[in-house]
Amino acid sequence: MIDYPLLAKDRELSADEALEVLEAGEFCVVSTVDADGMPYGVPLSYVMLDGALCFHTTNKAGHKLDNFARDGRACVTVATEVEACYEDDFFTTRFASVIARGRVRRMEDGAAMRKVLVALCMKYLPEYKDKIGEGIAREIDDTAIWAVDLEEVRGKGARRLPR
Image (spheres, rainbow, N blue to C red):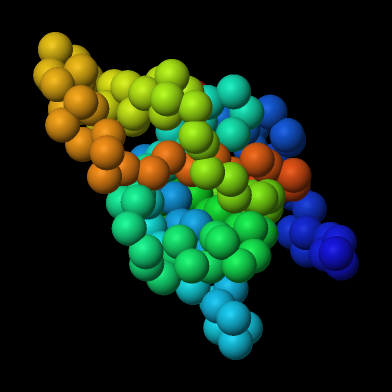
């Protein structure tokens, strides 16, 4: 793997900041490569658990599932704090983003799968926490849970507002 240096070094996020962006992100794009070398990226809801980026899919065949089975390498992109702005006579954007690479694996352990599904529900719809168990029971047979074990995480940010 070629290690490309970040050209705008002043925008590079620390490892901890990059992980914070992954934790805070609303959606990610998971990209894989087709058998013929064509990139394929799909936006997904996700949750970070135990250092892995986790998401769910159907367990039926599909484009991304075929790619996962053939080549488990994946690139994940997340952007947060995105806001167009005009400052100092310059059109620009505030943002924080992460590009992470790793390997996709299917989670098979029932307890681990349920843990991911509960975490996803609590991230996106915590007001319905009393419905999570019945929702999981209804959908679990048609659901696959995946984790991207992150091998490289790099972040970048510009014009971020102080927190």
